Structure formats: C-alpha cells, structure tokens
Image (cartoon, rainbow, N blue to C red):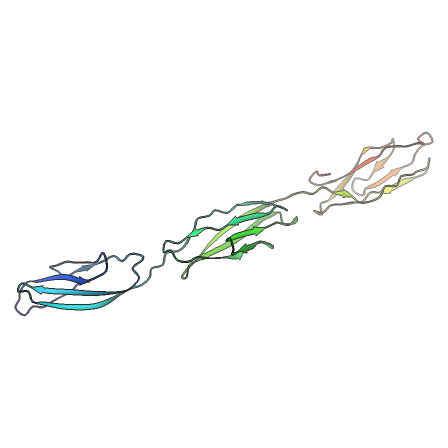
Length: 239
C-alpha cells in the first residue's frame, strides 16, 4: 500500500512506522508500505504511520489492518498397510500433520463391512471374514477446523483356505457278492466345490469323484478286513 502526505510548505516529507507488526516496512521517501504476512499473522493489527517534514512537524495516521487466515491443508504422514489375510487381525494407525498446528480430527469415510476406526489411538481395526478375500476400497479423512483431506487406498485380502472335513460315518460292514454303498459327505467352510478320491481301497472299490458315493461288490475271495482311506479335496487342493 502507499501513504500520501501533503505539506503546505512544500517541504520534503519523510515517512516512518510508529506502530506495526513484525516484518512490515515503509519506504521513507515514497511512503510505500510492504509486508508479507506469515501463516501465523492472521488477525487484527494496529498500524501507525508518521509523516515528518524537514522542520520537524509531523502528521500521524492510525488504522487497523485485518489479515485473513490462509489455511494450509493437513497432510497424511502415515502410509497404509495394503495387504491383509482372512481371519488375521489388520491394523493401520493414522498419522497426519498440520503446518498451522491446528487440532486434527480423523474419521472413516468408506470401508468394507467390519472395518472400524478407534478414536483412542487413531487406528483402523479389522479381522476379515473368510468370505472377504479380494480388493477393498478404504477411505479415511483428516480435517482441521477448516478443511478435510481424504486418503484412499486399495486393501487386498488374501484367501486363507480351510480344508474340508468329512462329516459322515463310514459303513463298516459288507457281504460277499452284495453291493456295498457308502455316501461320503464332507463340509467345506469356504463353500468350495469338493471332489473325492480313494487313496487306499480293496480291489474293485470305486468312488464317485463328485458324488462321493463309494461302491463295491466284494468277491467270494475277499472276506476279511480291508483298509479304506477316502479323501475329500477342495478346488484349491486342500484336503
């Protein structure tokens, strides 16, 4: 800004600052006032300018300068953990900074089912379920009293495959030359497609790969005890 003074005697005028904020200056000849307010200079400032002629007479002007706040956005300092696993606890602690030293507030904007935010330690917590394998979008926000910044990332949850378990009771007796049947039933908690196989069986015994039905007609020479081992396997190879 520029200060102009009129001296009725046409004497040279010298300008000076009597009251001013730190860093402000004035050109003593032109009256140009220069100041670059810092980020902590928001508010009201009282300024007094003196215009003095060569004979020592002076004039004073006082005014109030209002500096508006120029808010700087908060910045996320923390980087998220991008990998998780079904059934394994996941945690990500949010850390952000603010150049204006304002109080920061965190909250969860978007997340998969079950993922929560704790205001106690500014952390995200989640134990992915066994049907939550895949890619999930997570959005978290930090804000000061003026502005909000969002951190968005993709969290990949890897499958923790659980082996199937046979739940049926085996039929343990058969008769020579009579059809033996046993329908093997297995449960897979991941709802995978199952197949069945015989790893140890007497000659002639078969099992349906998809049905789990074991069939056998023992011959007259096969009386006695026979070891049978049947296996159920899911599509990922777990048995």
